Image 1 (cartoon, rainbow, N blue to C red):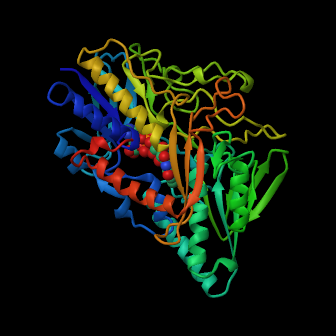
Image 2: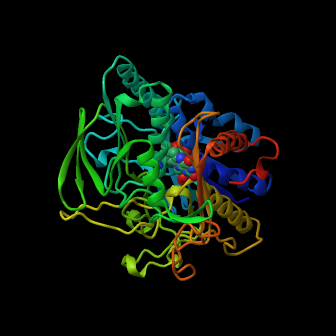
Amino acid sequence: MAKLVILGAGIAGHTAALHAHRKLRGRHELVVVTPNRKWNWIPSNIWVGVGFMGVDDVTFDLAPVYRKLGIPLYQARATTLYPEGSDDQPLPHVEISYTDPERAGQTEKLTYDYLINATGPKLNFAATPGLGPAGHSHSVCTFDHAAETFSRLEACIQRMERGERQTLVVGTGHGTCTCQGAAFEYLFNVEYLLQRRGVRDRADLVWISNEMELGDFGMGGMHIKRGGYITHSRIFAESLYTERGVRWITKAGVKEVQDGHFHYETLDGQSHEQAFDFAMLLPPFSGTGLSAINRRGENITATVFAPNGFMKVDADYSGKPYEQWDPGDWPETYQNPDYPNLFAVGIAFAPPHAISKPAQSAKGTPIFPTPPRTGMPSGVMARQVALNIADLMTGKAEQPTRKSSMARMGAACIASAGAGMLRGSAVSMTVYPIIPDFKTYPDTGRSLRYTSGEIGLAGHWIKYLLHFGFLYKAKANPLWQVIPE
Ligand SMILES: Cc1cc2nc3c(=O)[nH]c(=O)nc-3n(C[C@H](O)[C@H](O)[C@H](O)COP(=O)(O)OP(=O)(O)OC[C@H]3O[C@@H](n4cnc5c(N)ncnc54)[C@H](O)[C@@H]3O)c2cc1C
């Protein structure tokens, strides 16, 4: 009996676990290690951050689902990989440190034949002094952050109801952030809530971002087909920001957040200051800090992981200049080149480079979006990797056969722009391929047939229904597998 260990039970790890279980049940061993007790449908944290949903609406306890499926679940954090084994345990193994209250801090070594790293991002608030809930700004990256953020927003709204003016800033809190789409959703949900509460005229809403221009979303922007016309996402976004009275600052890297104001640098090297009463600023992401040791006890973290802490897979990490970027740089099987029984999916894999064009300020500060890895591609690659590993374990294949490169994958994304069943709206976008391919699509890098965007109430309903669909699937309810990733 062979053993698959999955690190992380977030969107990618949990999806991989469900599919691996379907294929390996009764034949091979599967265990999942994750420090969190609850599963969280992260996209709906935006709605927790504006009070449209509560924490219980976007989470559920993992343990009963894993008990139902019969998959051992370790509530623990993986700390160190020993891909060649060690003196006291010759088989490849991973050291874990328990996070459940009964065994907190105890460690254990779990052996594996195959391992999927789906540990997602570390929310690297420390990259910007004063950033984040422990500092002076707020976040919606986790459900508890989002709930706390809503209580601060509510206090701000109550001040407006008493007649005070407030400045609310939403965006990215560092020059190398990703996930601009999430900040975009939060901005427009706040704007919508202010309208509903009748205080919009007392709020100055400001967007700050490391994007070169609005509508970049870390994807280098996109041309979209909309109502029969071809529009660039910049025009689409600028119209929306203008319509909803949001001032925007782009090409900006936040350098330090203090009580009530922050400092930022723009690409021209100038320093600026922005005052705020409320600021939701996303952190940059890095790997979760796993290390790796070889059989001789040497630290090989820099071999297995890229400098940003994400795990190296079958991508081109040669550091090519932007002009030479190619869709073929992106990974297809998510297999580590040095240890073929190691895989990384979702945010945990190291991208070969950005998607948006990199830029540095006149002072040398990098200010550009790092590549997003949203839920749909994370789920798709997790499923494909789980199925490939199941084939390897059951002897159906000797190499991974399914390929899921983001350069040949499309993505659908629905960005909420106001949560309301009658007056809400969302931007429904499809993109193909996620990574631009200027050889196949010389004009825009993407297929105009499959890259589209539209804003309206229907989008809100779809996002709302997807919320329930994905929670249903994640709970492994009957026929979960018919709901696509
Ligand atoms: C506010 C917000 C809104 C978003 N909205 C959307 C959206 O509308 N649509 C969309 O497609 N995407 C959205 N995304 C992106 C989406 O959430 C990510 O693509 C997705 O969560 C990535 O999945 P993942 O499994 O790689 O990481 P995660 O879902 O973060 O899961 C990582 C898991 O690994 C665990 N872990 C961490 N460290 C360790 C360790 N050392 N050992 C073991 N386990 C560990 C974590 O506890 C977690 O369970 C949003 C993101 C944010 C922050």
